[in-house]
Length: 488
Image (cartoon, rainbow, N blue to C red; front, side, top):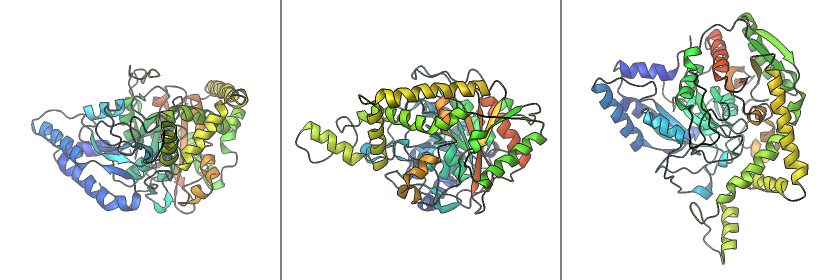
């Protein structure tokens, strides 16, 4: 049975094999020695981390009980608001911005005694699939630093995969948790839309964005998900986890589970990735699962639907960055119109400007019906197609990404490549479904391959159990530890 890092570290703390301060210092030291190669962290918070660790040590010394996540170091993607700690979305336009409030997810975790090591790298405003649009430069893959970590939550994935954070929170708008998890050989859970509060998450596309955990094991993902999934009145779309505790439902028995395979998910996917996922299917069959094959033709329209709608929402959400209230402001201007124009031109990177322009175009007079309205209608057909599919299966299995981690620089020279990496992940966000990426093998170069399990709305317990069962059946065969970071 795969033991998660969270419980392992918790046991060490409870048995006083190590103090929380010593544990935190180990991770801070590992960050100092490894982050030069990985570029996972854009801001390290040693003072805050050590203060939190000291509080946990004092509680343990007094004989009080310790919560599951209490004293466990972790990290946050740099678009999750942290009161008094710089939060930039890795964009020049938010340089120096320190929120005056915490995101709900961080409020919950800090309230449970979590130890924040720092804020991690990401594609600027979460727009990208390689982490290279960051104003700090991209995060590197812990299995080969000449390759990207993926995006947009590349910094979290690099930190967790590189053992310089036990776990972290990222955000997933079109695959931004699952894709870097696949590239870095770890677990990434994108919850159902509304299961985890978005309050304090700096928005990219509000009807797609969702916060979720990146971890080394499925059990850890379940622990973190249970801690952050709750109804939040500060988020109008929040519903919480519908009263479910996913950790308690993890069990090594999936006999009779119906696992669906949609033909379209495998179109154009290279042989080594298809082969790895098909091997996983055979593992499920050996455990008594029933395989159901079907077609989802509406998936072919998912990528254009996503980019039209997400960019339209981005053009609206990013209108607030004007240099007047906070963040970067151009130094030379003659009037307010020139100031706003120059601030946005200088403050936003090329990819963000490209998506704002596309979003503004599809919302403009004369093009709204042709693009935006049509995309919304197609979104409805994709939602209905998934609803029909889940009448005949419990879980859908698919590749997470149609490729493994690519070399740094290739996405910048060919942006279309990064858009195509989203082809298997965006349908989940369009339909608001939960999805989890877990390692399932390696390509010819030894780079990790990920597969995703997709469930019906608020069925995180089902997909986590299915992922946990596979992980345990494989006994670590599909997980390769990085040579970086803390060795436990």
